[in-house]
Amino acid sequence: MENIIYGKNAITEALISGKREINKILISKNIHSDTKINKIKELAKEKGIIFQFVAKEKFLPYEEFNHQGIIAQVSPIHYMDLDDFLDTKGDGYRSLVILDGVEDSHNLGAIIRTCVCAGVDGIIIPSRRNVQVNATVEKTSAGAINHIPIIKVNSLVNAVQKLKNSDWWVVATDASAKDNYYDVRYDDMNFAIIMGAEHAGVSKSLLKLSDFIVKIPMLKDFNSLNVSNALSAIIFETVRQKLTNKK
Image (spheres, rainbow, N blue to C red):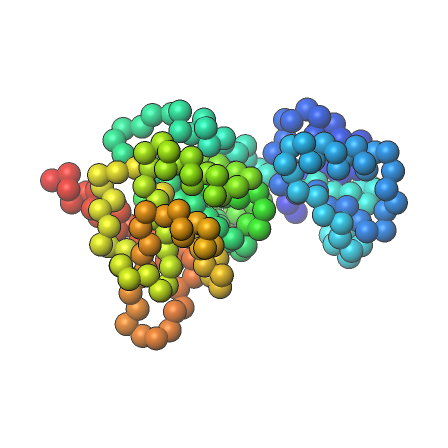
């Protein structure tokens, strides 16, 4: 069972205190709007937390709880603020992975695990249209989630623009790109790699902002790599360059 808070009073207090990282609030479509629900919606809007009205079937896994028709899904970690990340200093050039529309919890867990192994300094995810860190992500990451900052932002476009203004170079992936991922020099710059959803890819707005657009060349006309596999190929090329050029 994922981490949850249930009931109107408990969720209201969690929102007011700000001590819990709430991914999403689910409200039953059958529940009549009242003062407490309106207060929760108002607080969620202020804090940029998504709330959704869903069918009663969504609450079947929580029947053992007195949920009152409202559940808050809670992250097992605390997300980091992008400004705080940029204010921290590291040894040499730093790296980020940005996820645009990755919806599968197992993929996110695998990506986190890969990023930790490859020494990536942080992962950026959007608050909407992307899986959030949940119990499945935590388990799939095999504990790696405790060893890397996860940065949640309301707008990927604004986040990328902020990175560019802070002397970061942005590399987006796209199957129709002209350049291959190994054509970029990653070892002499702060870089962020944008990975898109498996079907939709990186959004056009982010492609326009990117300094490089690269692809993984395929020997067969069959694009079967999922996002976690694709990231592994690219991110370990950055490791290879870093280690080779140290010699």
